Length: 456
Image (cartoon, rainbow, N blue to C red; front, side, top):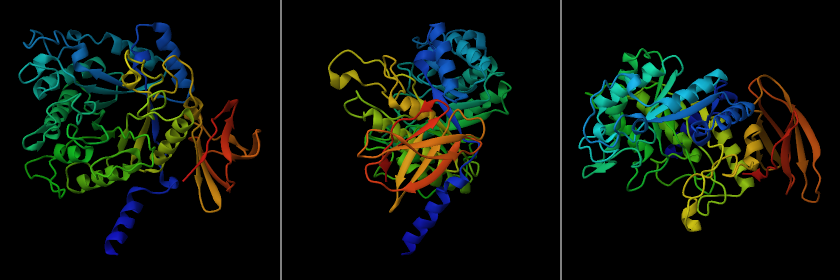
């Protein structure tokens, strides 16, 4: 009984009602294929499209290997590693300039893979990158984007072997220790470049552990020098992170899925990350009250035969996931990964869709139901006798009104149910009587959201 009571109290601490959601929570968007394209018209069109959807923040991943001189050489080329002019940052600088001209803010994630000469033995692009050289690189990047970037994040999915090695050694998980040194070097490099007052995020962790991927909570503990009992090693100083970034992807089961391992964090198990950060703050390993930045997220849709869900389910799952983030008082940012799906690869269907089908449009450009669902997220949650409706008008810049429509099972026509007034940031919530088989949608200023079913 005592264990159950403690668990209930903890749940109240880490997940408070919607009234406690932070009014400053914002939306990030990431569309690398379009925004880093050499097609100027495509870049401009995509930036305007993202802005019309109500987004003002972009995430850009800058890969060290992509901009470094002689990235395939195991020998360090002769150049000043702190000089921004020594790196080929053209496409990134172009994107930042074009985005800033339209009023966007930039979160820049600086990440591996790295040039071979920056690794311990020069044999690949991921194994034990030099923290010293990474610090110099961060100084160069900080100097290049000092006037345009105020939020930085260190390394994309450092708990995944695609971006950092080794993940494990004979002694167990290892990537957290490696990452700790990289983060410290990056923070020093940004201070040296004059960016000491900028926000710096740590983590950017992948959601689930395997025999090759270190689980995010395990990774967090190791990077912050915490034991299994959440006790900090005395010789370890507190990491100077201003937030924790995470990618809470879920499975085909949807946002309600909770992984069996307590060290995994999908959107349905976000409270685990709340609890971990609370413990890390209490142990003095991180700042107390550190915010969560969900910097990469999306729901895979068809035609992915393994992870993809229907277009209707994609829109519903994405909205439910956003409601989870909105109700979590630690979450500072929620994101959408991809405007368009990745292009299919040659070969059999089982291998053709090995990228991401999480876009608001298909790879050919046709809008999915998630497109309007992103503009007007809607969740209908079932109670015993009533349905709670929650939604968000993303483009809203102040209080506005929405119209809620319903379609009953026996009808092929939509009719008006009621209207509701939003908060200043576009959120609204209401209830209605439960009717089996009923679907809901939202209308706002000429836009119509997708049909939404009742979920539990």
